[in-house]
Image 1 (spheres, rainbow, N blue to C red):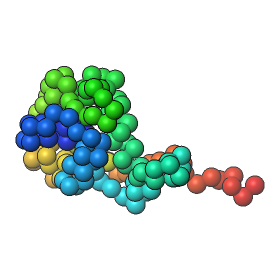
Image 2: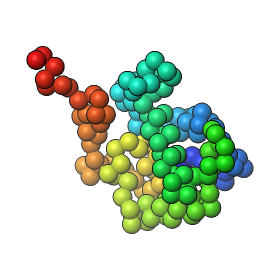
Image 3: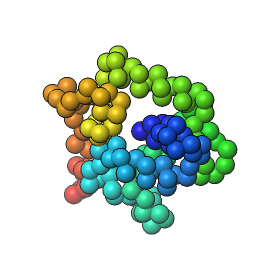
Image 4: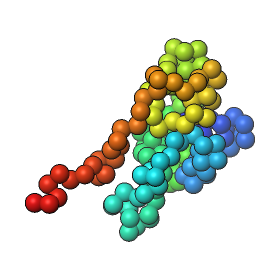
Length: 147
């Protein structure tokens, strides 16, 4: 999703670098992340500091992973942009999704809108992977809590 947002803003709007807030606003405006109530809650470690929703943190982690893989540039703090390698990787991935070489069905964090962006022929179906009941580790009930 992050690469799609950075690609979209670069290609369609001519914006090379954006802030974290702008990237998240882009994803939000297009309804690309299949947000559930648990995604809106902050991680316990951020409850007091920022109160940032978990899904924002997941996007930030995607940026970190993108930097490590040289898909996302690391020019300055809070400056998110795609590298040439990132643009190429995203375009190849999108093409593989559009042709059915890669399936969008296993991606339970992606909304129907995002899946259709990647594969215009996508239709929700029984092959779609269901979101795990406890996606976040800290949300798993503690079976020893009463001891």
